[in-house]
Amino acid sequence: RNQRSAHAQPTSAFTRGLAALRDSIPDPNAFKDTAINSLSAARETTTKLTSNIYREVKGLTSSELEQVMLKATAPNDVPVKGKHVERLVGVTYQISGRYDIYDAVLRKLWSKMVEKDWRTTVKALYILHR
Figure: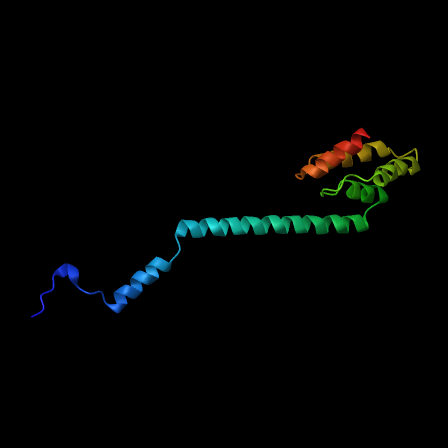
């Protein structure tokens, strides 16, 4: 005679399978956090890539002044090259006296100073004070 209590019933394979499945499902909050972090990283990478491509295309299609400015204020860890600053000064002397080059240079430097990348801001300040 087999006397089993209600608490000691063996679990069926179906119940064990459901329990295993439930245990293998990731925590929804952890999954959400991981997804948000991955999307943020992808967005940041895409933004940087797009910005770099934009800078390259702009450099190819711009005036000499803009090309020098883009090279001198590139958002990288390389210091401003003296040749870029010298070219920038040289461009200001080559422009006709009827054109106010200083306004254009100051406007371009100001736009570089308000960019998000701190390296571009520091380089623009350096050029301004040279």
